[in-house]
Length: 401
Image (cartoon, rainbow, N blue to C red; front, side, top):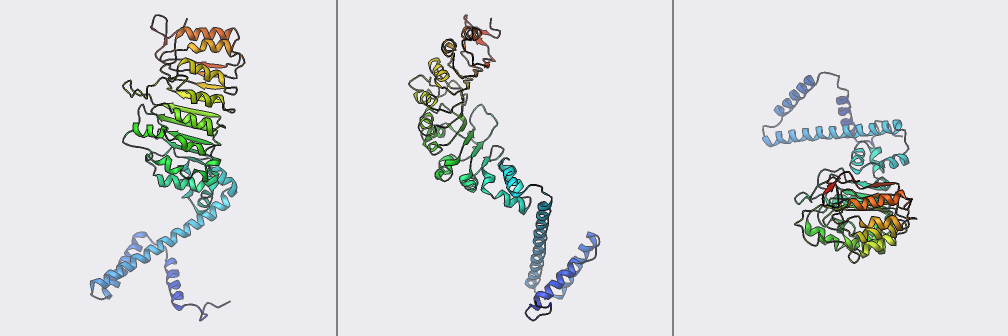
């Protein structure tokens, strides 16, 4: 091993090391005193330099560069020490740390990754991005950032949440959460990760009427997610009937489906205010009937007629939860038939909250059927209405008799 004075070592390097060592061993003093010393020595150096202003400027720039290098070196040393400290004091092994990271929202994961090298290394593992949750972001998220996250996850991606959870009565026209072509761009190469995706939740990401309508005509992008078991879309401007066709053909493993439409004013387009009958709802009926694992169905603010509601409630042999809240068209007439013909139905929970035209007499008839034991599986019913149920005289009733 070469000695410290070996000719193979650079004398300049030894001199530099000696100067830095002297600087680091500088005796402790007040910051003001040290700053004054630096000021004084710098002024001496500038005074002894050439009178040429450019030479003095080069000396100042060189001093700033050296100070910057010292600061960066100090930060690197601090990070190394923090990593060593975390490695010895953090009680979880890397594989469990990655497991924890996979369970937090993406914003928190990014913050943890910036703490130290050890956390950053764990945060770069694809499994840490198995559950991407961007619902806590308050600002617009760029497509490039979202694509980077999904590609970090790769085939480990299991769930994806996008948008804002905050409810809005109408779409936001001016401040979209993501750019309009986001979904198409993101899922263009969905074969790379689509096979493993189990849960997809999109909240209020459509920003205007025209884009929402165009999305509903291109729902074939969902066809690559054949293993989806949980799908939730909130904030569409009209019932996405084309989506149900894709789900019926390509996504047969869905267990939980939730589609929630905006409550738009009465002057909205007739296309948006359409009444879903058996013909228009054929793809929806096909999906519910042929989905062997479907246990939960939420269709919020869907203009279903009673015939379609009846078919949905009794056609599935696995569905235990049905929510048709805020429907502007259901009168409840299907409840009478449901109570008389679905004695062996697996349905346990029926929610019809704030249905505008729900009639008092139909609800009472259904309750009487339950009392008689005709619908033994039902455990919970919610037909509450802020405006009351429609009574025979056309008035609103808040206390059914």
